[in-house]
Amino acid sequence: MSIEVNQAAPPVDLPADDGSQWTLVDARGRRVLLVFYPGDDTPVCTAQLCDYRDGIESFSGLDVEVVGISTDDAASHRAFKTKHALPFKLLTDRGGAVAKQYGAWGMMGMKRAVFLIDEAGLVRYAKVESVALFRRSRDQLIEVIQRLPANAR
Image 1: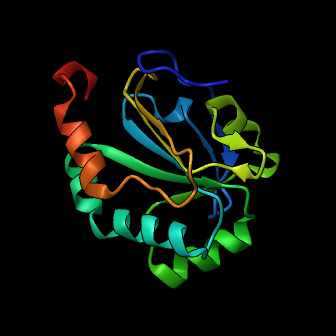
Image 2 (image 1 turned 90 degrees about the horizontal axis):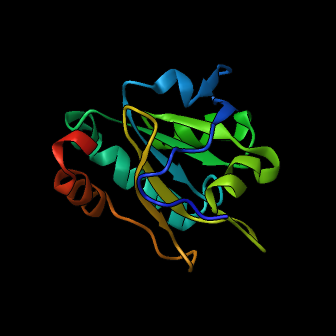
Image 3 (image 1 turned 45 degrees about the vertical axis):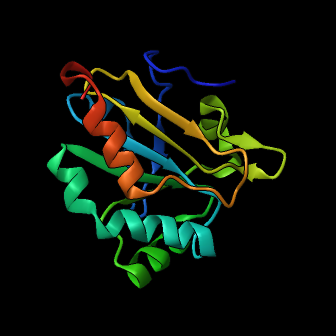
């Protein structure tokens, strides 16, 4: 399955690193950047999420909440988040059910992917990387978000 821009985002209802349950429905009215990544404390994932951390004010300035998703459990997420001072929630998608709905799952497991969901729950940007070493940088994402029409931002 692949997600198309301007279609309704599939539901997300996953446990977060802090023990809470995070749902996309509860995020209605806010823009959310869902960041699917293969694993905590791996070199490319660490670089990617630290890049987003270092520019978190750019995302918040555009009213975008960043949320990371991998198959790692809450304990792994907490250690990873603490080690790298990540200022956003990390969700556990055990078995990859949500990743599969978003087309962010392959033969090797979780793919690296980003989806911008708008206030109404529509996908406004979707990028699933075909090669695990590639990643969308903060600057690339900020540029995409800024280019969106006002009603899609």
